[in-house]
Structures are given as structure tokens and as C-alpha cells.
Image (cartoon, rainbow, N blue to C red; front, side):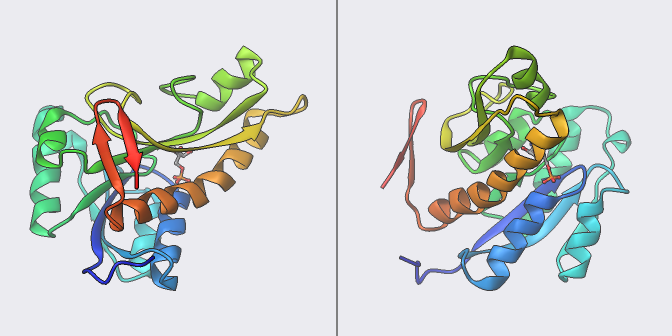
Length: 206
Ligand code: GRF
């Protein structure tokens, strides 16, 4: 059921292509997602996701991490921008930086990430390669709230895909990406409807 309340305001952080960003923009514009993307912030000027944002009239902001003296200072700049735009929920979508308590404390249980594996298996970089090399028969993607660890926060939703014998990193990544584009908007919609409650490590969905 769709909420009659104001749409949740999303700030999306990226470093690259932004296909998840595009899926979220598309669901938002079609009305399937009761949330609007109010800004896209990238630490890389050349990230194609910034171009996607501009195309849809969304504020596209390049915040260069090299202009800050450390992670905390960078996150403080992020917080300033996100708060100025009254962002309700921060979405990490291929944002290749570790976030600090400076961001997490400003948005408690309001920072989400998507990871291309079934956590807690294969956290960190190159998750698809890790799954292939391990010989896993199933992998997938996980949307979780972000905590201070790497890919360790409370799990919101997961979706599994098979790992096929002739898979390469590219073919497995494509299968996972396809699921990500459905899973991330679904998790954001649950947040927008006020249906997520974090109890310790568990996310309860009402
Ligand atoms: C996705 O695979 C996501 O799981 C990971 O980074 C990738 C971003 O892809 N965190 P895209 O830029 O949304 O295409």
C-alpha cells in the first residue's frame, strides 16, 4: 500500500556507472517508488552516474575526496550537502569509499548499501570473483543498513542467483545486476512505507 505521506528524499552516492541509480530513478519517475532522488553525489568527476542524474534534472554533485584531508572531513562535507537538501535516506550505489561514523551518526539507520553477494559470504571487493573462486553454487545480492564495518550491517533484503559452471565474472555480475535493479527499489520502498524496524542485528519487516 502506498503511503499518503510526503515522498522520502533520497541522496544517492556513487563512484561509477550508476545502473542501480538509474533503476531507482526509473521506479521513482514511474510512481512505483514513493521516494524522489534529490541529489547524486560522486567522488569521481567522470562517473557516468552524474550524467544520468543531469539527464533527469537531478542535482549532480562532484565532491572530490582529494580535496579533503581525511575520511572524516570528507564525510562531514557529505553530511553538510545531504542535510542542506533535507535528505531522509542515503543510498550507497557503487560508492567506492568506506564511510565513517561522521556520516552514520548523522543518518542513524538511514544509510543503505547494496552488495553483489549473499552476505555474510564474500564481503569487500570483487565479491563475484570471490564467489566463483570459492566454487559457490549460489550467489546474489544483499541490501543492508550500513554500520561501521565493511558490509556487516543489518540485512534488509536478499535475492539469490545460481552460479553456473561456465560463468565468468562478467556473466555472473550481469545476472546479479539484474536482481539488484529490482531489490534496491524494493528495499527503499519498504523504508518509504515505514515498514523497516532495526532490532539489534535484525531488520523486521512489517
Ligand atoms: C553493484 O554491483 C553494487 O552491488 C556494488 O557496486 C555495483 C554498482 O553498480 N556495490 P552500478 O554502478 O549501480 O552499475
